[in-house]
Each structure stands twice: as structure tokens, then as C-alpha cells.
Image (cartoon, rainbow, N blue to C red; front, top):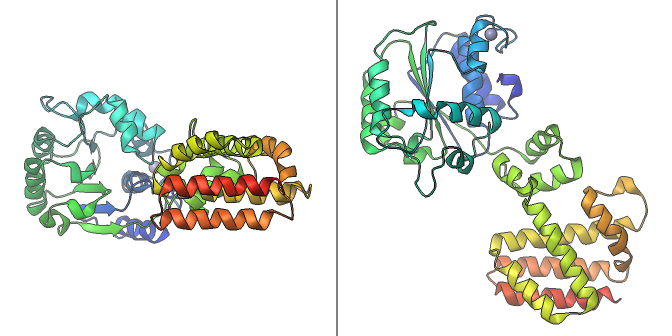
Length: 370
Ligand SMILES: [Zn+2]
């Protein structure tokens, strides 16, 4: 992981780089901000830069022994502390294989995936007192291979109180060349006394362009990436939830196809069941579904123009549009769009979700015959 691999957060990268360049490393750094924006990626890129033996153009080289050790998770002076299960286990060591695989595969750190990786079940992973003991034991020792010893603590807000107090002691009387990097989704939940002893970087959510850029670089086609980015609230974890198998887009596409078939067949009882099902997704998600409907109606209308460059459809959607688009025409498209917008606004204005959706579907049904 290099700074060059980080999308967004340009100012923070600049500040972190300067800390190293000016040889002005604080005892503790807090990288805070909502989940899914790449805070751990940034912490890792910074650590690599700090240890790199051959820094070039403001970035780590990726080739020197330090860079290779960091990439292979065997730098003896870099330690990760993370929420886990198994209070009786002495330290986090037994979870290291899962951890190393997790941060390589899920660099945006979805905590549900982590819970799955360690088979947490219904147990909420936390950082135990034992983990702090391990830090307290190793922090006074000299580093093995490099000048700095680094502890990267993921989700420090999950520290048990005894653990937080032990960390506080270490921050109050720091050892030289020992660095703590706290990577926190909820910095506000940290002990104020810990919070105040850190140099803080508050990261903003990613922009729509940045999310879309990341998704397309992962091989998601542009129209879909763009659409997901507009719904993801700057959160890559959320975006990934919408893309994968059974993701939100696929789910919406299924509902939309079903809705249009039922409208076409004029099956009111089916529409009632479907509107109940969609309303049960909750207000926010129902509103997102209606945004999806608006897009599909608009795209289907454009589809009729037979100018593919104008269309922004996924493969699956395009297949459906071949059959569906003839039902959207200049006589009904405006009315359909207006009804969709109205239903969307009603949902967000606390309207009864089931009634709003059923009413909406009946309106669509009437319009489809025009
Ligand atoms: Zn290097």
C-alpha cells in the first residue's frame, strides 16, 4: 500500500508525508472518520512510508526490505491491535492469519466481514485488557530492526475500559520512537484524555467521483459504478454491499421487473403483496428503490431512441429494457416520472410506506396502458 494507491484524502496525505519528511513523528496519531473511506489504507501507506529505506517522490518504494516486510505482514516492529473474541486468549496472535488475509482482501475494513472471519457469531468483538498488557509488555523493549516501533489500533473505540486506561498510561509517558496509530470510526467515543494526546486527522467521506473511480477500477461497468456511487454516501463498504451477489442493485432490479410485469398483467393482488414487501425494506431503502425506478423509466424511454451511447444500463437491465421500453413513450413518461418522484417524497415525509407504494404501483399500472 502506497500513498499513490489512496483515492482522495489529498490534504491528509500531504500532512502525513510531512511528518516523516520533517522527522517529526508524534507519539500518537488518530485517523478518524466514518467507515468505508480508506482510513486503514491510509494508516498502512503512512507506515510503509515511515519504514521505507528508499523513499521516492514522496512515496514508499514498494521494493526495499522494509516495504516487502510490511507487504508480507512480517515487519517485527509493526503490530496490529484489533477487536476480537476469546477474552481468555492471551493476545491477538492466534487471529493474525485471519487478520492478514482480511486486511489484504478487504482493505476498506467492513467490520461484519471481520466478525465473520473470526467466527464471532453473536459476540461483539472488543479489544481486551490482555491486548493492552501485550502492548505494555513490548513497548519498553527496543525495536527489532528499525528505528520506530508502531502499534496500529483498529477501532480503538472498542477497547474495554481497562485497556483504554492502560493505553492512556502509555500515551502519558511515551517511550521514544514508539508510535501509536489509532484508526477509528467513532473518535468521539474515545476517552477525552486519549483523544487529546493524539495528533488528529479527521477524514471526510469520499466524493461521488472518487467512489465511482474506485468501483470502475475494480471492474464494475461505468453506468453501474456511477449509479452506485450516487447512493453510497461516500462509503466504499456500502458501495460494495450494493454490487456483489444479492447486492441492492440486483435486488431492486428484481423488484422492478416484477412490478412492471404485475402492472402490465393488471394483477392488483400481486401488486399489493409486492408493495408490502418493498415497504418492509424500511423508509430509506424504499426511497432508494424509487430512485432506481426513476432511473429505469428514464433509461427505458431513452432506449427507444436506439442510440446506445445515451444509455446508462447494466447488462441485465438492458436485456429487460428490450422488452419493457416499448411501454414507455412520450405520452406517459412525464407522468410516470412525476408519480415516482411524488412517491419518493411521500415516503421520506413519513407517509405510510405500504399505502404509498400500492398507490404508486396502481398509478404506474394505469400509465402503462397509455
Ligand atoms: Zn521501500
